[in-house]
Image 1 (cartoon, one colour):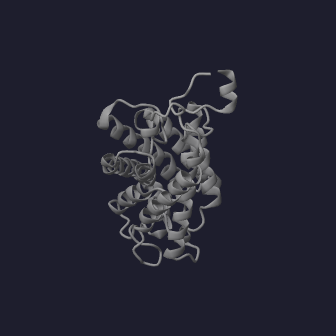
Image 2 (cartoon, one colour):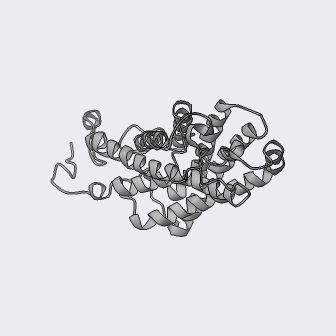
Image 3 (cartoon, one colour):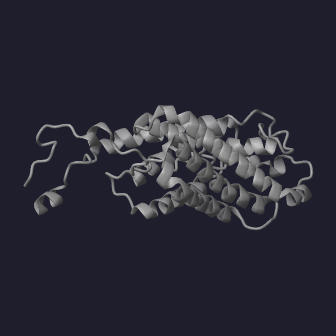
Length: 290
């Protein structure tokens, strides 16, 4: 059986440069292409996610389940569109966690976040424009009653949840998201086939929506919340930065997911990833075949 580089005491390129998540495949389009991918991937995500909430809230078609499924499909389709080029982060919390724990370049963090937020903002403007007549019919004053179409509110605008509870919810929900995104997409773990990864990440978002959507509408993504929040603010929702109690709230779905992403990323890196075989190591079964 031939010796591996590790057995020979040599350090391999894989040890120095572990595969970046969520996509370990080499990418060569340059930063411009990566930013275009992040823009369009997040754009697609918001078209389906904010679009379905507008249909349910303003159009009266659908329910909570249709919202969770459409958000999951939006994530899946956004990843299919952007994954080969940028890795399809589509979420500042994911981007920051990748930089903190998986070797993603810190120099790209701010550009990625900007592209994600602009994509979310412009997609939300399209949804706002398309549903203008229906929103005006059900809520001509553009109040809290329909503000939740575009951005989250504590207790979804109706339940007795304060900002502390919403912040806690965002930390936990995003920690779950990042931990499992890392696990699903780590090539050294047991990832699905590459073309099925978007499906499983989309299903993960569906599951989070079904289990963690009460306290703050499972934003779990600063760009997903702040981009559409800005779009609603510039198109008639004067209270977009505040919650139903009149308190400034826009910061909660930004700070909470970033903290949660760092927590979830740390739990994966130091709780599971350290026990995975290195990229150049073989399993006992593989060794017998050599």
